[in-house]
Length: 143
Image (tube, rainbow, N blue to C red; front, side):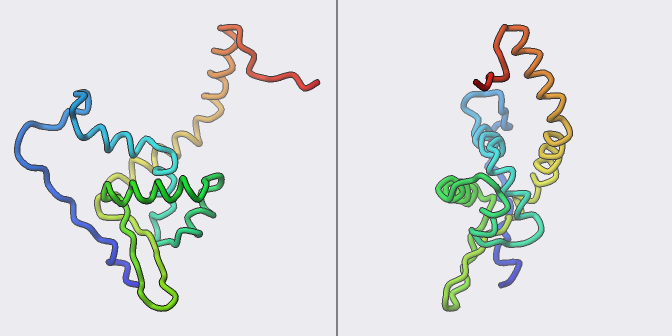
């Protein structure tokens, strides 16, 4: 399967005002919402090096259900982040690959994942301190 089957060009915006994600009516919020979803972030990173079949992506994303992965990939395809590539040989082989547009966001998404991995101990400590401060138990006693 050709690696360039999943190459989409970035479509420039029409003229008009500049996007402002702080504005409630700005369509850029949709992009932020999509990129803020954990399965989108992890799927993008899983697809960064090569095209993968659905089952291969599911194996990489431990804990994702088939339904959630299908919804995520469909949404990413609709937003132009993923292209579904069909090889018509028998049996049909379907792979997913990142588009040019998705690759422009990949460095930021990868850095966000790395930040989360580096910061998990600090975040957990902050959660614990906050819960103690408001009198909430973070650990359930085992009877």
